[in-house]
Structure formats: structure tokens, C-alpha cells
Length: 343
Image (cartoon, rainbow, N blue to C red; front, side, top):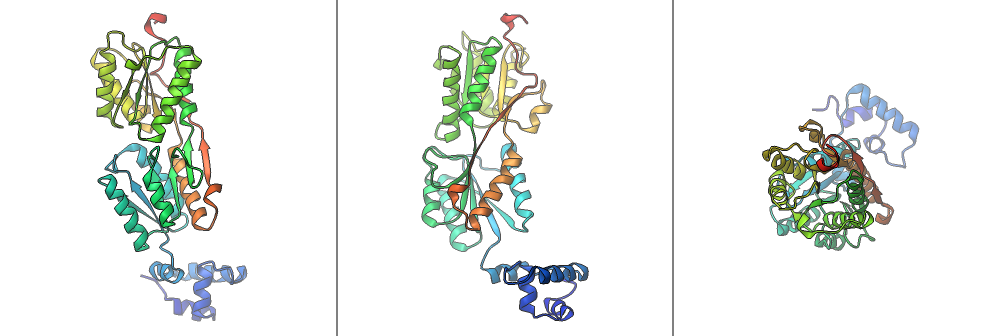
């Protein structure tokens, strides 16, 4: 409850309610001197504006939406948790709200997009886990709602996005393992309808080519983006007659599942089989042994994505809001030379 009303604050300042309201909302037709005076009085008297009334007056929801992809289905995935923390930090600094919607299916995602846009509950949307050819992007462009995607599509020239250079990251992972002496390097990739999975697969293949290593398709398999999926995929690879000596994984969570499969055979990750994850999640510091990973700054990316979306909402051209970041190899203890090379 407000300690004083807008009317009382206006009377105290001997200004009209409209002037006080516009000063608190930062309207450009109010002088900076008046804005400072009004804000100072509001702070000293304990006045808090009615956010619903302010939003109604401005014709804006002052909220952005984040739609959890149907492939994830829950809020507990560490990758999304880190991203959402960053998004929240940025929008709360502007006193905006974050609306998180959880889709149960692909069709549900479209229904959520339509409902949020048509209801006016959000001023913009953030999409994650982009597909190679993503119909969600087409729908957003048709609706004319400001949006930013975390990740690109095959053709991302017309909309705002922030992505990590997945191709370069995977090429570096393979070349690093090859420099340690590995010749049979396996890849557990994500479903190839995701654009990031396609980019990482291409980087893996380029890394093999650059190191003059023969590509063996038996060393490539798909996994769900879960520890259970990683365990199944890792068990499959480790059961090959000519097993890999190193495995690069589409995510840290998948890598954790592979580590379990390695330990079940009485081996130690990083000794009999080297493994590199992807994402740089904090949980990797606490595994046994600590997980080597290709780290991407998820929390910082979340903050930047929110800032980019706010810029688009404020009228900036989405084409000005396109950024490609680099991942960093974070060496811990699960990468080393193959046993036959001297350990």
C-alpha cells in the first residue's frame, strides 16, 4: 500500500497530478530539473506508483515473455536456469516483468505465442533452441511482435539474435583432443533439427578434416539433451569393438551421463576415455573428476538478450541487434592423452 497518494504528492509539490505522473514515468516533455525534484520527493515521502495504472496509461505491458521449448518441458534444466537468471537481471533493472510460458508440444508453442501477443500481456518475446528452419520465427514476423532468438536459424538476416559460434567451438574441441594424441574421437550430437546441433556437427567434421583424421560414422550418435540420453549414447559408443578414446558431447548434461557409463566400466573419465562437455554449467566443477567443457557465458547472454529485446521494443532495427559470441575451452580433468600414448 502507498504511504501517500499521487494526489497528496502532487499537493506537496504544488504540481498537477499529470505533471507528477509524467515526471515519474520519464516523459521527455518534462524538464530534468522537475523530474529530479519529483523523484526526490517521492523517495523521501515513500510514494510508490501504481504499476497497473502506469502501464495502462502508457499502453504498454512492461513485460517480456520467454517460451520454454516443447522439447524441454520443464524449468529445472540448468542451461535454461542460467539463461533465465540473466534475462531476469536485465529486465528487473528496468522494473519490467518476465512472463515464462511452458509449452507441451510444438502446436502449444504457437498457441502460446498467439495468446500472449493478442492479449497484449507482453511487449516482446524471447525464443530459445532455434531450429534450422523455424516456423516460430515466421509466426513472430507475421504478428509483428518484437523478439530476439537465442540462437540463429539457417536464414537469420531479418531478425534479432544472439548466438555462440558453435562451428568454431567444435572445431577447437576436436583439434584440442587430436593435439593430445587422440585419433578416435566420437561425437554425441543433439537432434539435428536444432540449428546449433547442425553447426556443431559441421565443426566436428571440419576439425577431423583439419587434423587429417578419418571420419567414422560409427563414432557419431544422437542423444536427447539429458543425462539419461548421454548415458545411453555413451554406453553405445563404449560398447563398440574399436571404441573411441575421446568423446565430445553436445551439452554438459549429456557429458554427465557419459561419465556414468565410463565409471560403470571401472574406468575414470579423462584417463581411459577423455570427454568434453558444452555449456560451462557450474555443476561441472563438482563432478568427479571435474568436467572439461566448452563454456559459453549463459548468464551474460541472458542479460544481453534482454537488453537487445528492450532496444528493439524501443524502436531499434532488429538487424542492428545480431551478435555472435565465442565459447571458451575450460580445461578441468576429463581431457588427457589416450592411455596408449603414455599414461
